Length: 259
Image (cartoon, rainbow, N blue to C red; front, top):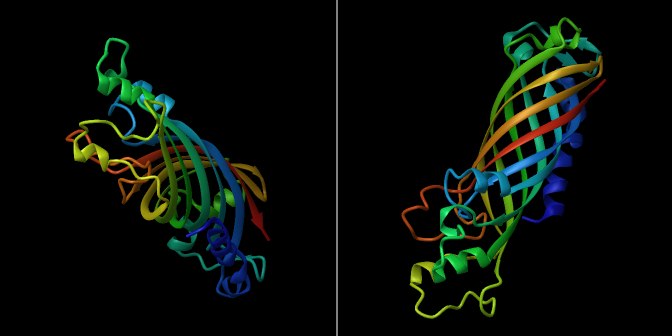
């Protein structure tokens, strides 16, 4: 799935059905999010501070909310039901890119083996586009927050994203071809630079801050687990490779309410 198609699907979700949604008691919010992305992959040592700190990229996203507490067609509140006052549906399209390298004990200066030299020479880049939805829960009243009863509204969310990824793994070792003598088959087949697609489970915890009657600032702490171990372009058949790729994304956003 290419970038233009993902953008087309997102804008169809946001705008094409706006009039229909309004008739059924919805209103809309749009916004933008951005922030650092920590990419947990097959690059580097597991649970290593240097690996987690340096294999960090940057992401940006466009977001759209269905707000069930307010009706856009009549500029009035919907019926006072628990779901309407505590849940929103969040649609979004995201892009993030991360440069990856090996860190940890196996590439430390005291490691002088051929394997350590090969790891130190390896690097990677992964670009990821995502589109999907989350159900967002606000423990406090959405109506009261919109009316200015309090400035901060916490939330949690859970959902799924369709993911299109494009990895590139390279090496500066030898002739740069990853063709080494006497390399076990499990290492020869551990690299794939072909683009691909998969799904991700998304969960987040965050807060909104009421900036103006029609705008909020948002701080969102997100975890995503991918259903593929090829997102970073590596998938070695070794005991240490225990999990698929996943990310932690800390982002800040600006949200505007469409009347």
